[in-house]
Amino acid sequence: MYSEKVMDHVRNPRNVGEIKDPDGYGMVGNPCCGDVMEMFLKIENNIIVDIKFRTFGCGAAIATSSMVTEMIKGKTLEEALNVTNKQVTKALDGLPEQKMHCSVLAEQGIRAALYDYYSKHNLPVPEGLKQSKTVKCAD
Amino acid sequence: MDFIYLDNNATTPLNPVVLESMLPFLKEDYGNASSVHELGRRARTALEKSRGQIADLFNAKPEEIIFTSCGTESDNYAILGTAYLPENRHKQIITSKIEHHAVLHTVEFLEKQGYPAVYLDVDENGIIKLDQLEKALEKETSLVSIMYANNEVGSLQPIEQIAKMCNEKGVKFHTDAVQAFAKHPVDMSKIPIDMLSLSAHKIYGPKGVGAMYIRKGVKLFRLMHGGHHEKNKRPGTENVAGIVGLATAARRLQNNHEEENKRLSLLRDKLQTALLNNIPDCYVNGMNAARLANTLNIRFDYVEGESILLHLDMEGICASSGSACTSDTLEPSHVLLAMCVPKERAHGSIRFSLGETNTEEQIDKVIDLMPTLIKKLRSMSPLGHKSNK
Image (cartoon, rainbow over all chains, first blue to last red; front, side):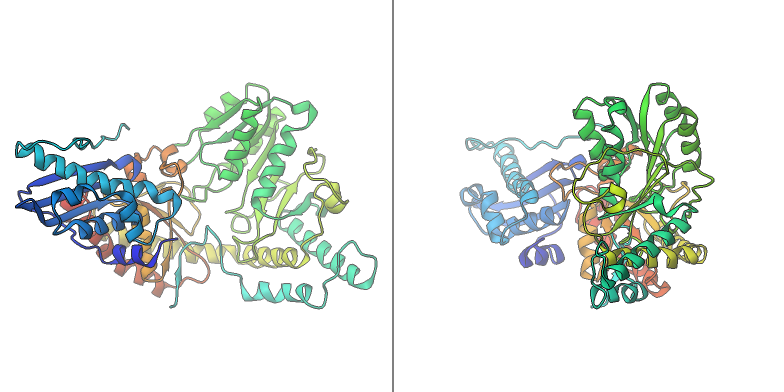
């Protein structure tokens, strides 16, 4: 069902953990739907110098979060903003059809953390960037 | 890699004795049971002998057993075959919220055609509420279909009482006994069950063969059309090798079910106790139900089921998930939701279902592995990293 690359990231996820006092932080997803993702960014001179994540979710959710951190570490904020879920999926050699929604979460996580960075530092928020939303379970 | 196979409610390995009994009918005795020649007669003899053996297990008559391709087909035939009888058109059908999809989706299909349907609730242990059934039976009903044992959590339903309640009202009763067949013997002379579905591949038999008990006198609307096979009820050339395998498997298991149930429940309880003791924030789904001896459905807060399964798989351990992250809906297991397990917790549930190939050594390996595995996943989870501290 999953590609070798996905399984590799599930087995050995890159950049797991947290950054104390991050410059940007985002949390997206919904525990009721079975996935929640946290992103921590350390930013210096417009460059993402460090990134960590934590994910509650299936194999695809873990692999896409891990992959997206690898893809944007060392990149400029503009480059990070341009990373799409399609690129993440492609880098993982694809995902099963029913798991495509998980890759959206990785893109949203990065964008939420960047929104947090721009707004906390009173910088103009690029168009289309939104605040992150985690929905509480309504049980 | 040597697998530790703990997914026996999904399917079981084919037992060598069962395979051996099938081989002649895959090789030299390949005749069609409807043919008049010697090879046909041999197939017919084997087929009828198997039918008699299955009937004996139920204390039923051979003509009350028909062979099908699987449990799902048997369920469909029982439900649609009853509902489509002219006298039952648009009469109410009662089932439960925790049925296998073979029953649930079939009843939903009828509901879309204008049949009123009642889906009975279950308690937190996955047992249906009899008072609700009694109330539902006040309305004119053609069929009640309640599973014998639940496939996800293993809860055993009060089948005898349900059968008697239906019988008193003159309502037909069907039970999907795919998970219980040959593990929990049923005497049809004592329990008024009208129809029962069973399958071979859950009891160390082959895939692709099932059967149905249909009590003498119970009418069904014919769904499939073709030859005169299986008393005109189920056309199609009989899968003789599969049917022989089914009968061998059923007899084997039913003959030693007490011993094997005891052995499995000891292993299951060992696994259950160890996980509950060694892993914080973990709970058994259906803990206090009368349960299948082999089934343990357990949830680990703050982690997601599929990620547990993938990590178990890396160690050669096969289990399954109550989480439906594999489906398109993102909805967790309908069984756990019916048992009022909150959604985010249902997502963290996995099912270990033991079988005759499992040893204590294998269970010990799982016991050793699980705490580290759950700790790793919780340390990666935004919901769970605190629970490790």
